[in-house]
Length: 378
Image (cartoon, rainbow, N blue to C red):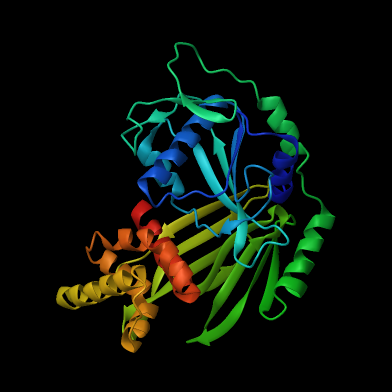
């Protein structure tokens, strides 16, 4: 079993960017440019490594390999994005890897790419890249190439050795459980469960009992063996159930206008642990967007636009506008779910302005974008 934190350390310590490994300060697949560049790198790494895994490490400074981290990223539909834009798409996973010393909520992103064994190419145009383009790695650069020979396998032995050196052990697992319960989440209700005598899942959060069910907020759920964060949210509530084989997370989101708020089931994620030391994660989107009166939404949408324009121009907000600002990301989310196509763009375009203006509203904005991403790629 591979400890993903050790894997990232081995990649950073012993390898410059090359034909099976890339590193990024961050990625942004919410915009066309960021999405296009991400797909280009996925395509190039898959084509350059037909018989072994290749990797992208995210949250690392390019010049000195300093680990700075990125926000937790929920990857549950990222395979759908790859499938939509690439022919012969590789299998891809995005995992949130915990590193000591990073601020709360920050992780290192690890993208693992496994080629289908066939030439991967762009299915359709994206940003400045044309449909039909084929990319390979040329050293540390992803380049378009014309070819007439079969792709070669040159990295399998190197990657196998790197993964071998990242194997987990009992000491790392025990230290991880103790650190999770006693140090990082000493102020929350914490639990752990061992599956198939190999896997240890820890979770922590604030507990709320309602109608015979237990719900968690401020939730952190981790697969300790691999140092992978399975779920993290400062806002949403989740229900956790498990048996000897599976661990299931049902996520709820709070939506509504003004004081009329309601919890809606968003997604059910089930981790199934097998006797042979493997596991599988299945996600089912259960979300049905609430519908609201279009006239009311137009009014709220215009108010939100006015607030953003004032913030951009450094015009002070009135007291009622400051209250509306707190609900701006959630109300833009509702507008987007009710057919306002420009609403997601407003959130993406103004995320850094809002971050500098109000950190609490920025956290809500990130949650709204996360929900929209899930719905979009489902």
